[in-house]
Image 1 (cartoon, rainbow, N blue to C red):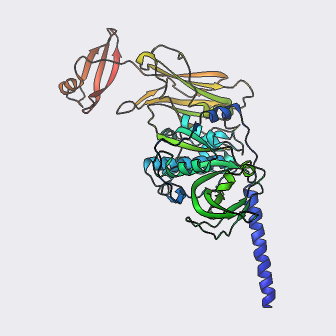
Image 2: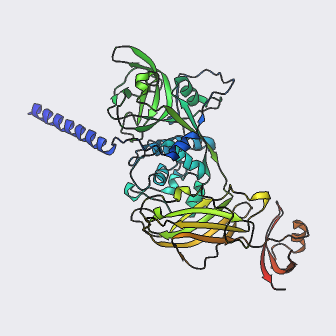
Image 3: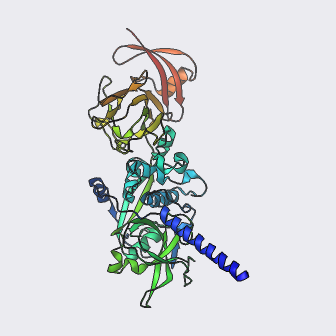
Length: 504
């Protein structure tokens, strides 16, 4: 009876293991490589080749593991075919930004960056892959949203978050450069240790490999300094998957099929959750990056990223309600002519990721009707000869080819953060405006500016700053205006005035 029970329990355990393996393989399918479009080629052309700075000669330690630092997030279990963004944004960008700002990734969702945000800005509303560089370029041209601001939504929603403040925060977190290097073990180790500049801790790297048919030893008990028990022993032959190199260990030993021992391995972190490998981690022997027959299953180049904290200066706040986001494209402009009806040029760089993108869904995603509020940065388009803006312009273009949606622009504002107290300029919209075929141009006037002859400090003292006194001033064009002092900054000497024009 006992023997039968043991046999029965063994069969149940084997069945459970088989079912777990089957479920795991179903969730983590083998994907093909994304198309290498002209845009992908352009982005890849922007990458900077990694070189070791002259005079960087410090000896490397036996092991490095950045996944155990406070800057690194917990193991990700990716949604759909999002491995490139999970590795590139969820791991690498999060690590680098927290390292830059000295923050703990586990302390708050505000300290981790949402790979779902970048993936859904890049997948065109389809469960398809992308390249690591795509997400990093999004962060370079626009910015990157945090997990706290983005939230969490089902894959089938292909969600775009609504809320100006969420997008304003995203504008601050930028890529400064995309780094690439050859599959050289010494170069990889130097970058991991100190970026090749003597700066510690060093960086992490993404790489792509074939994962269909790969084989692991899940019971590695050989020597190591880092203590993991999973090792890749055979490379895959089909499919494509993006992974993250988080460190290395010189003491790991890999014994090949002929019995030869090979020393050293990189520590790789997957995006299939903590149940995969050894808490998501495994060793990949150095020799897999050295032997030509093995390198054919690996990416030709590895990718790293430099990051920066950006301060937006002029930002468009847009509120619209539209039923098919692929129909629309957006561009921005400005003019120093207060009577202009359009700018000399429209710019679309920061807006391009929202343009004709996201599939035939409402702005917030599949099944998510309603208002959509977002931000577009206009900080990097100064006017010639140091002139300042008198009008801003938003152009919403509805495609005339295969457009299926309808909706309205409900509000447009421009917020100018160049002053101590941000200035808000409202559009000339008095009610929601239906989006028509072709161009829909919205004007946001700045209003006239005045120069006071007295110094700001003397003017503020003389008029008892903060009082409700009304003053009559004469403008440069010989007209008159009533003014009341609204704000005075004693540190900068800046005055803000409320005014109303009077007829002569």
